Length: 516
Image (cartoon, rainbow, N blue to C red; front, top):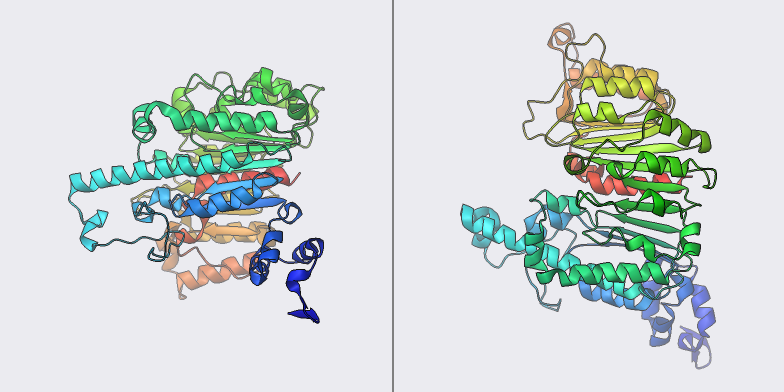
């Protein structure tokens, strides 16, 4: 690449190279930086990397790349989003078995890669006790690696005073499915809690050093936030924060990550995401005060773990919700319920909640038709998203919401909720004729209709009167109703809303909060 005479690309001024890079997407910048050392030095100019979005596998092979990137960008990045991939948590086969640093002989590692030197050592082929022991060792390794990666991220941004947006997602709820993460279990990974305290101290330093922070989001991160963390924010910073998200169902029963008194400092808060048990009536009254700007978005996580250890006695009553919506006329609420009993949901769902989105995800219990009926009656003005997920092992035992009822609750939902644009169902019986009715009632306004194939059932009495293939007829009638081609979801693994509910909720909460 010659410009004139002996003057080449390496002789261009740094300012011009940075200007050229600014027109290129990130992958092309990386390729262009291979031109020469001078161009490579210009690659990490602060103006080129105002935002970083990282999705990290919890594997030792990620650490060198992460350290390099954070060393280059951590001190000046303005917006940082980090997600720790859940693939390695769920599947023991997705754990990096080799603790060594990556080298020429290391196997290529994809998002969920695995290799074994001996097939006989595969966990699935080992005897029960030996398999359990190896599984436990892998989980300990995942936790240990997770802490190392978190330390790497936090230590690199501890002195960044330009940070405006910080978002951390760890999906530790996935880890808890393998068993409760007790202090004794953590002590095997982190003897004496040294690394946990180091992580917490780094987080406090980041908050204390921040001067421009507007967005602070921490979801399902293992003990990174404590009840005293937010006190390290200076009053000028706390007064200007617009979004605050603290989601951690691992916190002890006696603690809350933020109190109503602490919330009084966040006078410009426009969006908030909390565990439902931590959102008290006193908090609702603080946000309803005229000293606070109107709240636009409120995301609430209702988790069975929290309900076991915390009380609902302090939750906002209907009068509190009315007062809050008077001061925040444009407030919309997004609620996610993990394995919550129907009786508890009937207590939680107050009439004056401006509920726009609700997501049910169940493993041990399931949502009753009474809950769906209540949602249909109370939130028909606001509701746009309705997700119903039941991850049962017995595919032949799906609950039927329409059982012993004249009308199917899901059909009534589609009829009454005129703004409904997304409906996703798995693990509940959806009768084919009701699915056709839903498509006809909502038509093209129902932008997403996701129903898994195994959830759909056919009325045998109606099948006897049809000469056409019932599946083909269903697809055709639903497609006509929606005015677009439609098919049932054949592979549940393709949709994160079904396979990664916590990650889906966190991402949707971010989009929900940003869409003010």
